[in-house]
Amino acid sequence: MVYTIGKVTMDNQTGGVKRKSDDTTSQGFTPVYDMVKAVGSKLSILTAKSLKGFMLNLSVDAEDSEYLNLHGKRFKDPVTNFILKFVILTSTPNRELGYYNNVFKASETHSSFFEESRLQQYIWKKSITSGRPAICPSVANLSMFDTVNSARLMWFFLRKVNTDPTTAYVFHFLLNSSKINESGIGLLVMPTITQSTTLEHFLALDEGSVFFGKVITEDDKYYAISNVFAQIVRLFIEIGVIHFDLHPRNIMIYLTPDNEIKTLLIDFGRASNIMNGEPDTHLNILQKEELILKKKKYYDYFLHNAPSNDIKEIEKLKYMQTVIDYIAETEFLINNPKYYRDGRTYQMSWYAKYREYYDLTDTSTILEYARLFINAFDILAEMAVLDGNRTGIASTTIQAYERNGSFINLDNPDGFNSFIVPFPEPIPMRVPIDEIQFSAPRVFLPPPLDERLIPANVTAQPLLPPVPSNVNAESLLPPVPEEAVPSNVDAEPLLPHAPEEAVSSNVKAESLLPPVSEVPVPPVPEVPGPSNVDGGTKQTRTRVTRKNKRHKTNKRKKSKTKKNKRNQNKNTKKKRKN
Ligand SMILES: Nc1ncnc2c1ncn2[C@@H]1O[C@H](COP(=O)(O)OP(=O)(O)O)[C@@H](O)[C@H]1O
Ligand SMILES: [Mg+2]
Image (cartoon, rainbow, N blue to C red; front, side, top):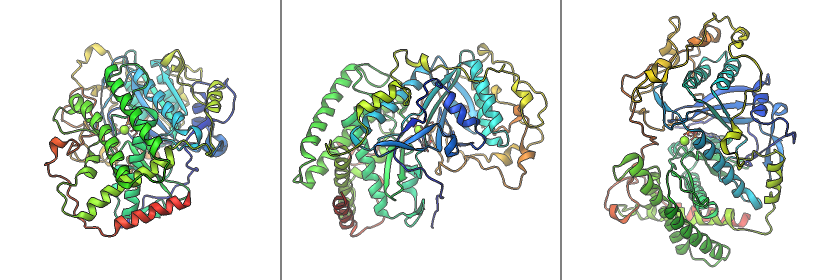
């Protein structure tokens, strides 16, 4: 089957944004507000299938964009596609919010959302200095709103999307959820990784599928995996960060304008910075100290050996396996007892497949897997070797941009408090209802939820707006099969850039447009929500440690020939190019 992901207009993929104007007077949420307000901008739901985030696409006309994309040494092209990550913020973590389209949702604390954004920007800044490629997208904007300002914000977004009931429902859900006492909404804005999909989806593509115009071969998949390995190692040895949630939907594969396959890591909601000298929810100081020693050892070895041409392939293989095994072990040791407690499941178990030679009888596959690591070493060397000749943005420039407000500065001593911002329009909360362009009856919002009425173990379903009698909710929102998306699983859809739920094409948009308080409600499943566990996708640990070596899994069925040679050719081709 030939599978076309689709072609979209793309910015140059260069990985990072800067404010267009140096005008530091328009701070806080204002630049995003201006873009959303622009007549030509469009908002649509991307996905909300994980525990916390609600992801939206924002596209803006080039002239309305407030941000420029990094291109080589300079920021020049306007960024026209953004991802908006909304979360509900509460003072205690994991507050249950009820079901959004069969997916159980929970809140985050202000500080964890802030730390996620801060870490993402820190990784981006560190990774790009001296002309190196980014490890993750940069942060354009972080804004947090108290309850009153969240309501204004949601009305603003509801007005924007009033002809798109599916997207409107997200804002309706957020509006109702943010009315819990002392809660609010957090919004992280970042550039869209253009021409991208998740590692999960990319690996599931059939051979011969078309990925943004490129026909994908098995070699391309191997090349993608080697790139992923290289970025994971960089994140640890260069930056000193363990991700702790590296399942294949938090790894993005993208196609550059030059048709090259590359990767970026996303979602630093659980990541830990081992270098910051502070204990966090995953690692105490002693654990961090131990990790720092390893990081230093691996980085020193790499810097010492990678630039020389005489490092043997077997050394490259051993090096990459040792470092990634160590990272995977660390993820496993922390994640399993915390979230799964079954001695097997963890986020990086997709990786174990590439370490399981023991049950394989097919030597060509064994060699292919070995080649993945050798290629990854070479990719790592291209990306991470500190090369004096490389041109790129200097760290002094980065600091200057942070000072003048061109880059968001998340190292502000006031911490998250300086990101709690007002909604820019000084309108009273309930006025906008009169301004809504469609003929909505004057229905006001339900009163704020009285927290005391909801025991902690009960999902907050009463928060959901009522199902309108004149709209067939099922036809709008097809129920997700239970097996496909278990409610406690962080399962993004396979096609992340398609709209989440397509409204059936034979229904007129106007006739779908319900009054704001009557946005269609998805069917609420009868099963109770999961226990209060911040569960990521279940990934089953098959083998990383020696203990598990005899466990049979993931036998590769296809026999492959000459792959090894082709990979090697590719490798030499790449080298020649440089
Ligand atoms: N910058 C981005 N560009 C393109 N897609 C993105 C980007 N950030 C997130 N996504 C998509 O949104 C999904 C969820 O994002 P993520 O940050 O992992 O949120 P969550 O914490 O809700 O899991 C990802 O799996 C990916 O498909
Ligand atoms: Mg995620």
